Image 1: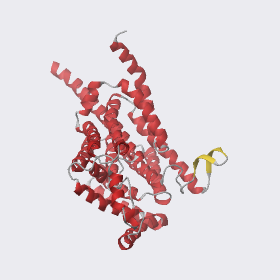
Image 2: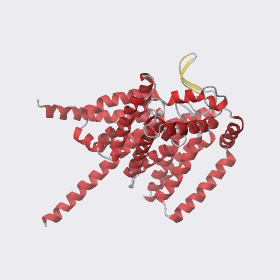
Image 3: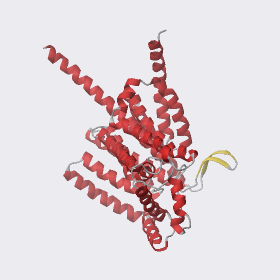
Image 4: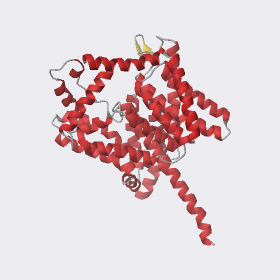
Length: 431
């Protein structure tokens, strides 16, 4: 048997398995970081033998596929000038590794017909999590999946949050809300009003969970940004005005009906006040302190940064002999641009923003895949102003798979349109 035949046989058998594993990764993301990591590793082992090197090279030579690889490369080079231990350098490089997966997903789902199944699997999994979160909210103290007395797989550690934390859960639900709004809008225009209403109802369910049960404050900021983006994407100027009025009324209703929303929002202002007046340690105050120190670190090494893995050491040094919020050391400056620039300088920050912009341009077209890609990028950019979401395990992998799968789908649709155009033009040339 020739090598070409053997390769063809391997691809024919392994490619569907790689697709199913990618679906499995998407389904596991809302539930378990460990399960997602294990499935991702298995998926890579199965996927890599199926990849066509020419196709991979084509994706890497594009801005959307090449810039993630270049940013990883800069992170790897940054290990050379970091004044920390080798273990700390490796730990600093770890968050960059996931960027290498983006062009692999482009290749896989440019050829695969199962891209929408990955996105649907994520939505289904989040819907299941929404149902479980609602049950926990209605039955506080409930424990399920008990392995043996005193040990549980899922239990209520935080009100309405069966797994992970409120910030991660609400961020996942925001993604689902705006995917469902897009679907509902298109279904309504197609005349499928019952299905559109069901999609809209589910979106409202996700939103209600954020407002009344488990909310991350970053999710609120992202929701406002995506609401504006959705309005300009789907409506005329007149329609945008009406949508914004409706959004303002919805926000007012949520504010008046949810003490939880009011408490979480006003707490941020109180925390900032206590930080400014008393240097008090709290979530909002520490975030401001991290940003202030980060700007100083970047100013000290503006071009190439302090090296990969240097963040924690810099914050430890700056916290020496300090009190209150100033005495807090962190591995995460809670801003993605700062997290990159501290380690790799303004060169790294410029590369990060170039990658984000390239991914936004990748999804400038119409259709569900383009919208999902655009909302994932926008969510990550806006969320990364207040957190280091690209380097976080949960949010970072959602970005990688969201951009990678949606990008492959968009490229596949463009390829199909090109083939159709060429096929339709051929008979005309024959005449």
